[in-house]
View (spheres, rainbow, N blue to C red):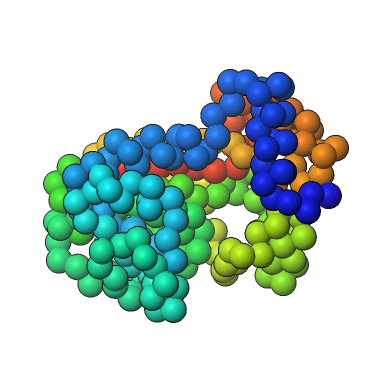
Length: 239
């Protein structure tokens, strides 16, 4: 087992270079979209918490509005320019005001994603973008995670992945498949919808001996026949 998460990540990176050099991590794909669609834009970070990956692009945005229903988390957020305490099924913003809405690992925690999509669509300007990443229930690890008790899920994240500093929140998985997300986006009126399946070897790479297996698994499913089982779904929707 790894005691230092930095050492674990470095070992994963070395294994990827050795066994699957063409692998594109979710961070690479997601950052590419955020960089392209936040430049000089008014951005809504939906379910922002204390902050996250959007912080990397703060200097290029026009404004970042942070929205979260947990006031304590929002209070500690030093990234956003404006803070709104609210759920995503009824966002207190006027129509057509946001250039780009971002939801980073949020959709799986939303009980009514249909209402969330409607609200995001409503507040976006014409041609506005909705960019998100969420878990894919067709991934074996995520499928197992869905049925685990909350307490066990939290314990495994702490012991195996050293993620005790991150929150573990209730999940609903109401729209965590390629087709359910595409359907929601289409129903609310998005005219351009692109959903990308991306992998992540970290969850299986909790021990030096399992790292090669984790990377080989990503290599195995990295094709058009098995990519339905990749861990994450990255969405780009244009109004």
